[in-house]
Image 1 (cartoon, rainbow, N blue to C red):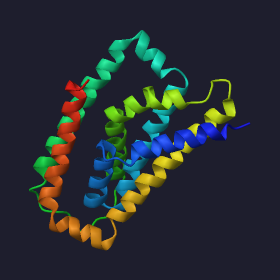
Image 2 (image 1 turned 180 degrees about the vertical axis):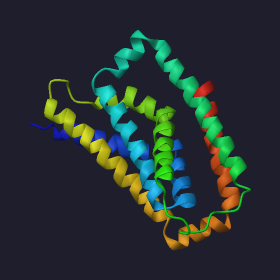
Image 3 (image 1 turned 90 degrees about the vertical axis):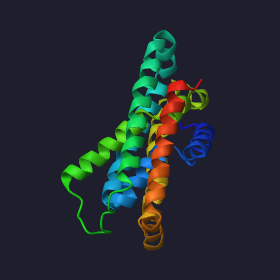
Image 4 (image 1 turned 45 degrees about the vertical axis):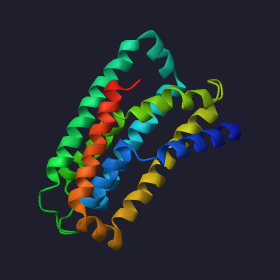
Amino acid sequence: MIDWTALIAIATLFMLGVVSPGPNFVVVAQRALNHGRAEAFSTILGVATVSVMWAAASLFGLVVIFKIFPWTQIALRIVGAAYLVWSGVRLWRRASRPAPAMGGEKATRAGLIDAYRAGLATNLSNAKAITFYSSTFAAAAPAPEKTATLWAVLLLILCLVLLWYGAVALMLTTGPLARAYRRGRLWIERTSGALMIAFGLRLAFGD
């Protein structure tokens, strides 16, 4: 039997967390605006892969690992912070380059792979995701013996990530929003870069 109460609680907590802007939102938005829907969806698949991985790890002992080997969490923070700062610097520097033509290039296999890797790396270094899955999510998770509910939770997380970020990608590649972005591209890109750097610094030096 599936514990629907647990599923509803997790869905509510997850959506409250995922809709607030963070590194994942920034990387999906930037990929959608600069490279189009195909690469944006590939990025989303990378984000979703790690989200399911974090959820599975939490359900099967992520908190225990962090307690037994606290250095693993510290290592994640250091590597994640470095990646986010590096990504922010790249965004800032790229802002002054000419914008790619809207729909002018078809997505290549290399571009899709790079987009997927960007989603993977960003979510792996996402402090908000690590904190959520090792605390709030773990507290709301069903008991280990509820096997059907555990699998349902993983499917739920996958669907919510795909639906939310998919909606973001679709909205940002729709005519009016895409045109508005191109008009203010310089400052939007630099603001995004500054946010990524801030996320990285917060991860490195935050509590």
